[in-house]
Image (cartoon, rainbow, N blue to C red):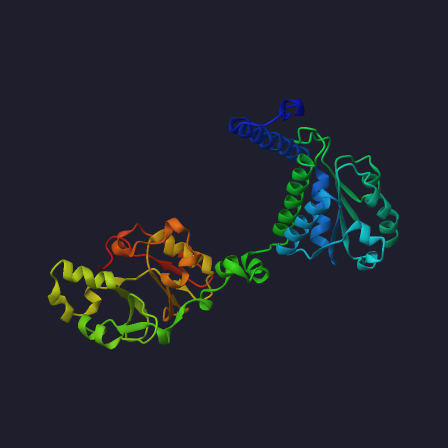
Length: 372
């Protein structure tokens, strides 16, 4: 698509704004498709250098390419590759001292002839750090000086004037993301590693362990399954934050069931008042959904959202309860549309069988035929 077709003349109507915006996105997406097919062995060589780098990846670029470089640097750092940004103008005024022979340079320039970048090349060669270049022209001075070149090829900027960096910076960002994420996978960078580097905010909360968020056992309502419903209700009163569930255990302290406020309401609704003096084991939910200690908070939140439950026990390796995750404590982590409606909560055993696999053990939701 020619940029002539995208020219702006005068005030745009809403229809023209949408048409022009869609053309820009399509132009850039088509460029990304072409670049994806251009990736070759040089990309694999770049991943090898990145994954084997014993120092830091030093990213540099100027102008819009520099801004993209900062984003690529941040992605590298957050996915397990130590990296820093070096401004090319500051580099020639002393910041070259940041670079060591074990480091790896990642240099961005669409033309490969940017003055500030070209001026750096002799100094980088003297320092001996390998250079990975993302550029539009492998025959440019940057391309010729680089150890590895990922060539983007000629690109048509989406700007109506064909001047403002747009398609080219989108391409650099996509290739930079690809390098960072493939390198991360090459290094077997996992969720635990990611969690260590992202302890803050809602993302950090989701990647933290359930032990950091659950209500500890001393704050939970726990009773023996042989008690009557009435005895259980009298014995499990707890000060402070109230949960709508009581965890039931056997004589060995193993979690065997859960009894919720909804279960109690159901007894009255169905005129089963007589069962208040029978064993709670007859009316509790057997083998409730639970997660083992050490599970990611994201897994626990997903179970609460997908299974539409309000309480999720946390157990140790032997099946003994350690605490309880209550929806009121984690509601901020739930997708808005997945916050359960407490007025009509389905009982877990009525759902199809679900197997939850964790590093510690397999927890199974009850299937048809289990004791209800």
